[in-house]
Length: 129
Length: 255
Image (cartoon, rainbow over the protein chains, first blue to last red):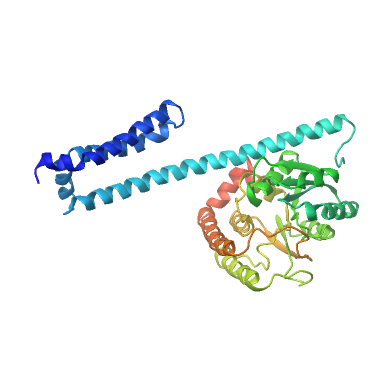
């Protein structure tokens, strides 16, 4: 299949990736996403979009890596990339969760201390020794 | 000695009032200064109001952290305020306050345990787990015995007394959900002395167990994996080193 026909065949895929990239950029501008955690994701979209725009080179790369069928190459690379991105997200979520738990505990302990001291001031100490 | 009694509670308005009344009656019989704190783990009922009405300390968590997060909150409070020991008992009334003295007596025995677990399966008095629940417990007993060398009869018991070393360890690193068996593995691998003491327990006095149906299957898988991971993480002397780090300068030698 000639290169220009391949390009016609794959451009909707590249367009779809570009659309997601635009949404990600919009979210970044509105500060709904942090750049630090998004770079790997944008790189993933960029590489796949490039692959869709340059299918001949992508096919050559696939053959060079031992894949007979281009689709198998795309699936394998996409799965690995998604697994890595998911892992990164899991680590971030875990860190945020640990921090949230700690802050929730700190806040609750602080509130209890304030309530206790107010109660003490009003002459109603709790369980005093 | 100063003891903080930690009562984690999630929607326990039905059982908490009677439990706290019982605790107040038992309090003068205890051989040390004892204070109770109810950790309201994001209840949507009147748990906080019931506890406040009983004139005990109440720490209300802004969201549900699970039993591990709630207990750790109490342990952090005990550690920060310089309590010598902390006792954990369920807010559902399963653990009679009159049995606290038994755990305290065990803590002060000559072998100096760091963690005393109240077991309902030694003297076989009062409420006993049956059927699938007991089968699950037997599996966990086997896991803890094979992986940690712990000879326990009630690894899921939430009626336990933390000595000073256990308090220091767990105020920093307490497992999240379904924490009891995992915390036993961590304690064992960190070189803490874990012992059991026979106690009498009751059936829950109100509310509903959070582990039932499909969740019990998840519980068994999760807890088994958590115990295995805790053993892997804290084995080969690393656990002891981490424990020393948690204990601060001087480590275990400072005890």
